[in-house]
Length: 226
Image (cartoon, rainbow, N blue to C red; front, top):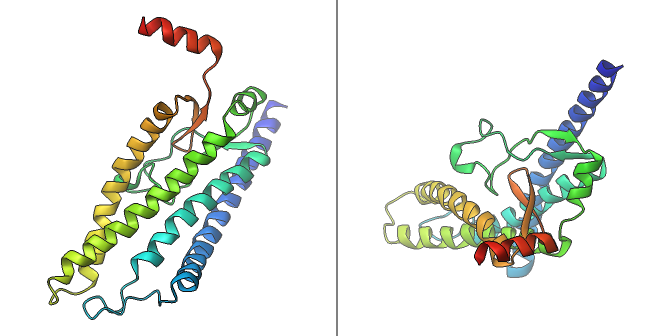
């Protein structure tokens, strides 16, 4: 009987994982499509750079829009898994992506899913929905800012050297953004709870699940400070 239950759980995890992969592939496609559509609609410009030095290279505004759309839709994918009774493990598998992308917002990773227990669900439901949304929106905003301003700065620097092919600044920008995004992500995860005095209830797919401190925890914290 136990073997049958374990087999059922493993099949459930398998289908959830496959479904999540499909959602992320669709996420990439629609994020690319919508980022280009929104950029053209709001600016009236082409998504391809027409500057003589970077002709054929993507516009920073169009590329930058992809990341907040992708991260927010990925978050929705995790929410769908929760509705179906599964959740992602705390840590992401670092073997699936380069180290600079590990736990980063620009990484495409396949988390390990588990069946959500009653105890886990009770603790997860203690989260602050408001601050969790603020956390994800802030996360999406700074990934946009890093990409947009990073590409703008890179294009400006390499514009001074017109003999350099456009692909070089684009490649250098990508490498620099990976390192910057990884560093700021770690800092953001650490500082956000402290800024709003929130408790990290648990970690899912490398990101904190945030809630308010209980009365007992607040008392204990005061006692430590005294």
